[in-house]
Length: 184
Image 1 (cartoon, rainbow, N blue to C red):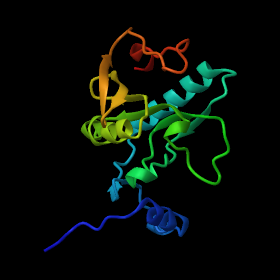
Image 2 (image 1 turned 90 degrees about the vertical axis):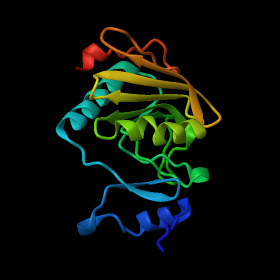
Image 3 (image 1 turned 180 degrees about the vertical axis):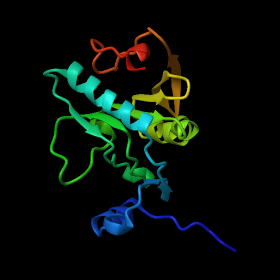
């Protein structure tokens, strides 16, 4: 009989600090609900879209006090999870002692092609349970933005699909707009 061994958030942090997943044995993994999940390799469309979103963020935030993080960990210790979203706008702090927590998140974005079902399913549920109130999935397959809001009971109560020339505005910065047609 085989079972899955769960890893706590603290154990995972120790493993990362010890370099278990780096160096010549480099692995792209993230901790989700106590399980090590191998991340899909980043393809050219995915990488380019992350760059576009980084540029869009920098250009539109201007003098706003936000820290833009690209493919960096988000600490969710109460869920034994440490996902690495493609883009996060977080409170402007120094995060040398610990990764941002849900209270630090202003906007969270995943770019999805192969990972679309996972990002709209498992990850959306995790982010909703953590209370992330503004989560977007940039859907490379259907060229749209899937917007998840109003987390309640581990689910997002408001899920919308934004296409073409429609605009989506970050909840914390309603003066900023993203138009799907502008990024494709």
